[in-house]
Length: 302
Image 1 (cartoon, rainbow, N blue to C red):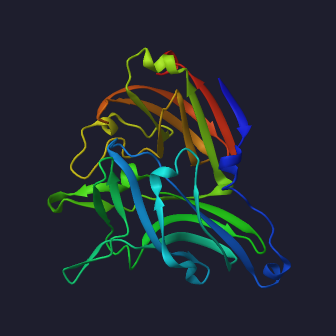
Image 2: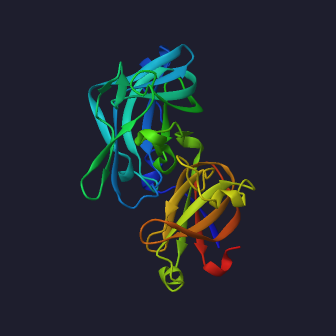
Image 3: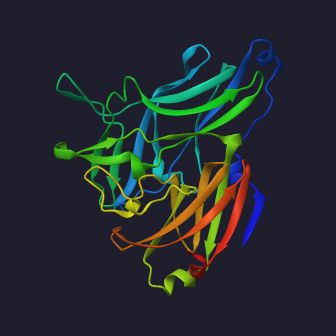
C-alpha cells in the first residue's frame, strides 16, 4: 500500500524556505543554509567517519564565493546523520542568483613535497583504531558537489550535501590509503522527497536474514552487474542513488529528487558481507516535498 504524506518534522527542518529582512531585498542578497547527510557504509566494523571542514564555498553568479570560513575546523561524524537526519553546517548571507556547485575545503591529510600534512579527517573502527582519509587536493581545490540551486532575493534556500560514504570511502590500490572519492550529491531541499518503508520485523527474521539493505535506483537503470563482485577500490550496487539499512523492519530513503524509482533489497551476513539479492519493488513515484509511506511484505517483492 502506498500513502502520500507531507514530510516529517525532522526532514522538513532541512527544507526551510522563508523571507529575510528588507535589507536583503534591497541589496540583492539572500541566505543559503548548507546541510550534510549520509547513507550507511557497508563495513559493520566502522564506528565513525569524521570529516573536518575548514570552509564552504559555492560557484554562482560572480564565480566562487565563500559561504563561511570557520575559525576552527568543524568536525562531523557522517554516520550520525542518516535516515533523513542532517547536520546544519552553516547559514550565511550570499548574493542572490543561481549556483551550480558547492565545495568544502577540508582539514584532511595530503602529501605535499613528500610530507604528510593535516590529520583532521579519518575513519574510526569499533576497536578504537583509526585510518586517515585522503582527498587529492581536498585541502586546496576542495571536495566538490555539483547541482543547481537558486538563492532568492530576500529569501533562504536549504541545500543538502549527501556524502554516501558507502561509495565515497575506498581503499586505494597498493598504497593502502583510504580515499574519499567525489561521489557527493547536492539536493536543493525544496525539491527533495523521502521514502519511509516498513516490513513487519517477523517477516524478515523468519526468512533468516541477518541484515537487509534497501537500495534506490532511478527507474529502469538497475542491471544484474550491480551485484557482481566488485573490483579493487569499487563497490556493489555502484549506481544506486541512495541506500538504507532496514532496522526493526523500517528503512528511510531521504533527500531524493522527484521522479520514479525502483527499490532493490539485498541481504548481508553478520560480518557485513553481501549474500544475495532478495527482491525488488518497482515504479515508486516521488513528488518534491513529500514523504511516501510504503508497507511491504516479502511476497510483494519481484
